Image (cartoon, rainbow, N blue to C red; front, side, top):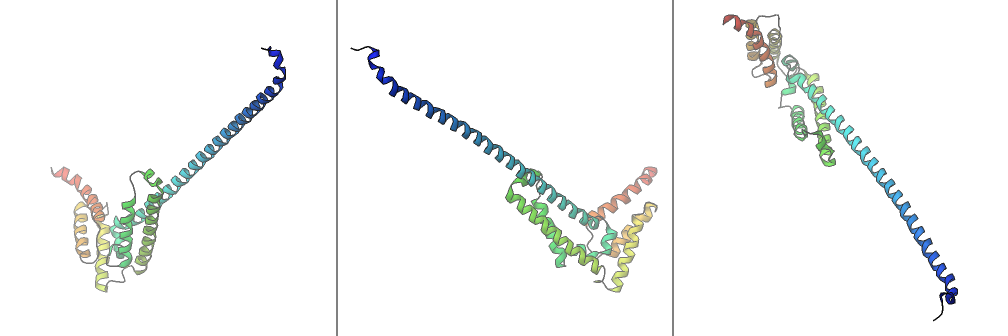
Length: 224
């Protein structure tokens, strides 16, 4: 058998093969490194886009919730203030198509409003709620414009006189300077005048009744 020195001529081709493998491995490792960097860049971009979309969605949700609250507040000006409602009685007259449409839109928007705003991050849920609030706002605007245009013109002269008496009586019932007895009597007479003319929301009655009841408390305390 020959010595290793006899195969000196193999060193060159083997060296070439090994060198080729090393070059390919280095190129492969470099490609993996670049791919890893690109993947991290894509992931970072994706996370940033998801965050942007989430922030945008939350901003839209906040704006829609605020719009809902604003329309509700405008309605409460009628629902809680009997004197204002007497001026614009159409706002509770469900026989009027505009009033009926607004009340139905309000119920629909209220039903779709979740307790947790984050539930609206679901695109479909938010789209339904946003559209419902938009319909509610539009319907309310239409009803309010018509109510303020018509005021009490749908009533006969005699009925308008009853409404005016009721308005003055409500002012007495709400007047803290009047005695408790005067306020109670004025409130009862006002309800009699409004009977059959306009629908008085329970919230408006309760608010006025609570104020009258509060005025009665000191008298009750003295009587006892």
